[in-house]
Image (cartoon, rainbow, N blue to C red; front, top):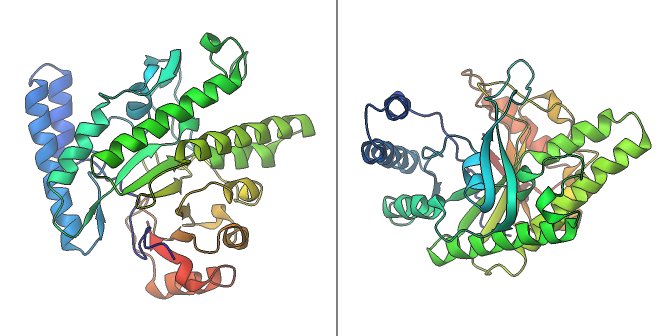
Length: 335
């Protein structure tokens, strides 16, 4: 059984403290420079890490405090990608996100000077001895934008295989860089799987369903090629999210339609959101266990969308319900 993810763990994103959001606003309005913003940001990260250590977490994160978006900051930092404003944001259940996107304008390449590497080095420097600094990056599939040429950007002239291989190569080299800097716990955040589940279960034709299934296969290919050959002492997990934009959700279908492919992603552990009825039952866990008997699944039974704390008895009961499909020792708990 892999030690990571831990039996009690966290996804790692936190609400930004008021002092940091104010500093960002002041920077945007020209009241402070980037150096001052970085001082505030790093001081708040130091406080967060101390709190994470205080409550007994074995892996700590920087809360994603250096980011404006959980995904776009990373993607736009890859060579060949560009951050762009658009007319409308992503529609959630009741909210609409900021109207921004990352597009591919040139061949995708690894960026040795990506700011996330310096962010990790700072996190590592303030992590107490005996604890693991954990990195999270978005799935490569978050750069998929479906257009006239499918997901293949125009610069690739219809060569999807080249695009997917370039993307995987950029991720593989980035993961190696994190490892060389000392990272031993890396998490891939992927909302695309839940997008695929929604689209497959809402498909109005077999043709529409097939197109989505092909996208899911492309995602599986890039993920596994990115992870392929990783060092044995580097643990890589994947977190599936249904969206949490100002406490609003985006996806509402179960894992059933994607589980056969999802179970084939070669990660050491999975973080699966199970905080309400939208997630469906625990039956899909059986396929994950059948595919990889040593893989740990961390159940997201504690929601961060609402302030009310779950009943301890209810959480315990749900863990035992999940244990009907996967051994209890393979389970963990998180938000």
